[in-house]
Image (cartoon, rainbow, N blue to C red; front, side, top):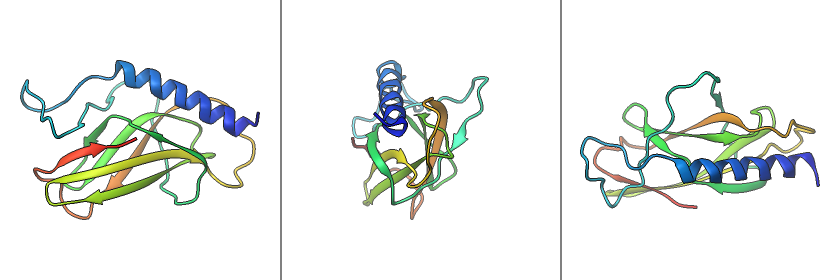
Length: 142
């Protein structure tokens, strides 16, 4: 088994464990919007959070459903575990409608990156929207 595949499997296992313990919906009321998958992204901790690049060409990509938060008016930030940023990147499929934004986030290896440490690091991915989110619901699909 290659190191990249082991790294991807490890990061996937950690992501699954994090998803099971992730907090529920975030927002201003106790009643979550049933149309939204909004959750609270981690905002504290001692480990630095690495930024993953957005790329269309990934090796061994797998879908993740990381927690997200709105950063500014038109950027969604997703946070979760992934391999080192020198070897790992993200790919986003985005469908923006008038009432909903659907996001598919995939994590995978950077082609030609070579050998990488099989570790999971706290990571973030910024997803720019074409228009401010406003009152649109966000749906994260696997």
